[in-house]
Image 1 (tube, helix red, strand yellow):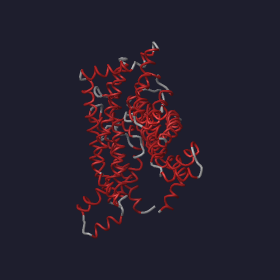
Image 2 (cartoon, helix red, strand yellow; image 1 turned 30 degrees about the vertical axis):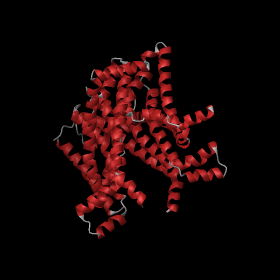
Image 3 (cartoon, one colour; image 1 turned 60 degrees about the vertical axis):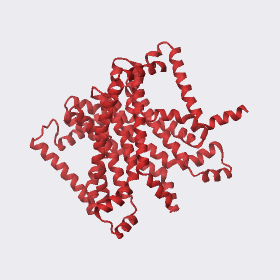
Image 4 (cartoon, chains in turn green, brown; image 1 turned 90 degrees about the vertical axis):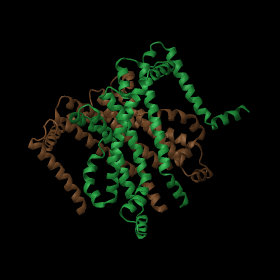
Length: 262
Length: 255
């Protein structure tokens, strides 16, 4: 009987949430039982109360908004530049051949390599931050948009042409929808990179944002506040991912439908 | 090489020549844009004298230590989670909690806990990569054709032999995706970690040169990072081709 209950417990999602609670409990216990550890690993309850206090003082909201602003500027710039360029490169073979060798040299470079250069030329302001984040987002977007267009079944394109689709219509009705599912994977990867860089440039340069908050509390040794700020970054990352997944589902729902129909 | 490729390389040459011409004309401060020839000469000098290889090696050792450690732990763990429903239920919420955290957020904490050094860097890379690796291995194992597993079972495969011989190889395409994305992120994160605190490493060196306005050296550092990314990318494709050769063959026979 008890074995059956145990099995049912393991079969349900409850076990996972129980594990999270157990881990948090262990954290609390460990921190409280070992004096001196509090300095490096404050009890979970201290972190939670720091998070609570920072929420009510408006500190977290203020800095979350600052991070969001940088992220949004950079990510949007990456999309606005990367998607059209990628689609054009995928669609027009000569343009692809012309730009590919140059891009092939730049593409594998870690996005962060541009930072010293950006600081040198643009300084430490929002322009530089936007540029670095946009640069990081640009590459995965460009690649996936290009590959998305190039991956469209040539038979599909020819069929559409036979039915009289040309130019803008062909583009809107066949090329764009055909490239979208693949392009979404690039947009998702770009989101990860943009967020990584947004938090980083804040630690590195700015006076605002969650990244700044983390490095600020490291300097002032507000350890519980560091953990609380990291928690806030995690929540932001979670929220942005969730929004993206929902949008993605909307945008490419027909894709699953059409595949099932096939 | 076709004519079309030649055109692309031509454009690259034109761009480089234009850079050189603009830099030499003195329109832009040389502190921002030194001529390409100066950058290349500086790179050559720093490479021959061992400065750049030294820093590069320091970055690479830390990065690969963390990356390989993550692969050894995270990939088998992920496959197990994808194969066994109970384990999945047990660990999935905890993984979901740490998964969306942008890796850069933990760098200051790692510095505080572990001090600046190799252990801190390896830990940061491990944390960064293991999440992506676990999740991809998990999805890979979950999407293995159930008929394959059933067939293997009827041939007497079970337990670790079933997971190791059947589920793991069948999950390889998705595992490799995770390995590839992790590698790309790991390069970014090792440089980020070096910028926030380090005495060695190519990211540290490049930023130091920027701060001291040694612009040609800084550009040489950026160039080294580009080359590093390029080589890692090629190396990965090569290894992937080796490991996944059977898969490409399988796919072509299935068509």
